[in-house]
Length: 165
Image (cartoon, rainbow, N blue to C red; front, top):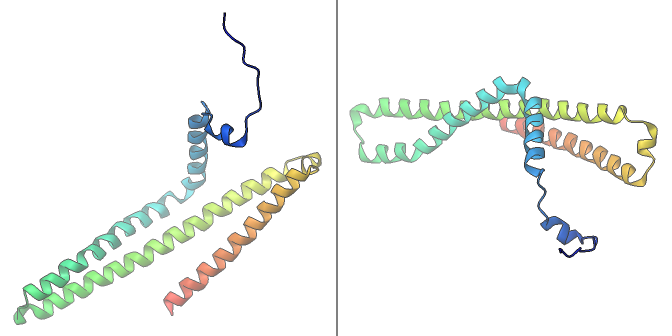
């Protein structure tokens, strides 16, 4: 005969330690849904990742350029070396700008779609949904996060403008 253990409510610390068998499935579903929001920006994100690779390669080539400039200082090929180095660094700078632009605009579009979906889901709810204090607190945190995102976007635009100037 097996002993019956009375069900005792778990403390919050104990509840966190209990493994949820459906956690992996829910996580993969959430990632699929997030990727569906990212799908319209796939081209822009791909260009951003390619620019990230070019920018990383040019940044990593800088120590090689410095070593080559010190080891192989040939006065006859100095002009060619300087032009090649300048072109490489200019390509890296351009790739950096393309990366920041692509990732920034893609992030803004994705977050706008996420916000729109969130607010549309709230608009579809019945008024009784918003009556509880817990729901009102959640709604206030959503509006606060939205305002914080707008402020972050504005600061990002100011930083981009400062880089251009």
